[in-house]
Image 1 (cartoon, rainbow, N blue to C red):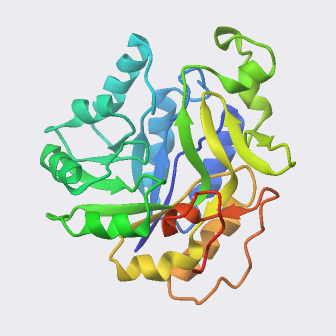
Image 2 (image 1 turned 135 degrees about the vertical axis):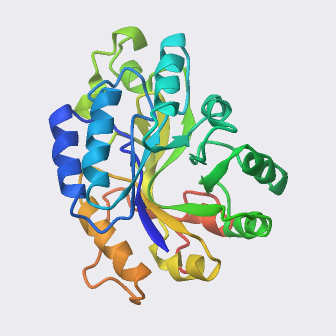
Length: 293
């Protein structure tokens, strides 16, 4: 089983990204996903810069994948998408059907968790288009995964989102801008002020959601580290960790130990202030923490 590091979902500055990926080069991850998946206004890196970082990571033996936007709204975004799909160097993670259509029949590609592969028929259809690996949509359960695994063929790989805040929805509106009484077109890049998003609390003062520009995420962190042995028994090929502004190195190390066969990590993972959740994997409401059932 391989360990992947998903794309950074938040808006970080160029210096922060460069420093982060300099560290990633030494981490025990097999696959690194690079690119902006949320908002096209986040231009800390150009495509050329992402490719440059990708080359450095590939030189360390890691598989590099370029991740695309999950919601496209303008022709300029389609132009960037075409350039990503035609990069000629790295595998592409398609995060919407526009990218799937551009990649179809040309070269193998990956689908991210925002592509709604919910059933066997859809999986077979994308396999014929060139799908190499798919990331299980985060709202699906282990039971559904087993059903999908039953029809994979031709070396198709399965990847499971195993750690990180859950990507729940995308909107044409920018929630972070709205929280600051700003229009989306004049957001002043306020996402830079929130390297892990803006947590929204319920009336009972419980962490509920996270605002990340046009994306809504869970407030608790999805954590399936205890289910890794079960995933291995199901022949899941890859487990994914999502970067955060803190403790990603420790989380990666913990997952690597469990993948290698440790009953539990030698160093416990720091618990996020907003807690953990794992309900979707067990077919429960996603916000529940049912890890270990």
